[in-house]
Image (cartoon, rainbow, N blue to C red; front, top):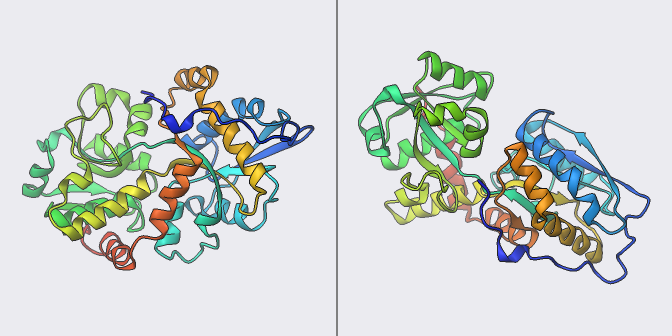
Length: 337
């Protein structure tokens, strides 16, 4: 379901003199994931529509650059890509979070990117399989539930560990699964009883039958506002019982809201960044783009480049004690089985 467009995405005129900025040029989009996933699908959608709304109506080609959950693509855009608007990209929404927690292979500074906007604000969800009999987060405080994850690095492990440490749930996370698909299969066969993290839009796109038949039960959603489909499922921030929990949950929520982000490298001329943001906004507002997204089954919940830049800065500038506590909990042994 597409949410109403935000007022801040009203068309903005391109700067004077920018009409031919990209004439006779081919722009390249760097996608920080492999072909076939959701980022790839959204990137192809953008490539079909953005060029016609940029000065000079350039062609756009795509270049997949998977690696390190989007960090490789972000490093490339920051360090190597030309700083003239001819190369820009999209990558994992957790990429600014990786900088905030000091992940070792990060060489970019998120606040310096030329953020163009984002296409989504999809909430993450913690779900259990219906045979557990658990229907809400209170039930997860009473009954041990076996969840699956790839490793201790990531939100599939981290969210259950966070909930265990803060509100007293009894999730037990088994790591070692090779992919989210493997976790889903293990739930279906009864090997696992739940999954600690997956965007609600992904459940809708990949497993709509499970939703229709009530096979998965969302216990909590992580995002700035509730999904329209989940009006009775609490936000993570709704569960905060202390001031510390409010700060921890707020930091996590901000990182989730950076969904399907688009950025140009740092150092663009102001008029170039303004023209690219205006083109991105015009694309978002166009009926053709929205209809194409609908046909592809791709949800849109856009955010302007200016708003996205503010959100990124909020993640990067989060208090160090909050960040350290989140890392300690989400990568600790609190979710281990």
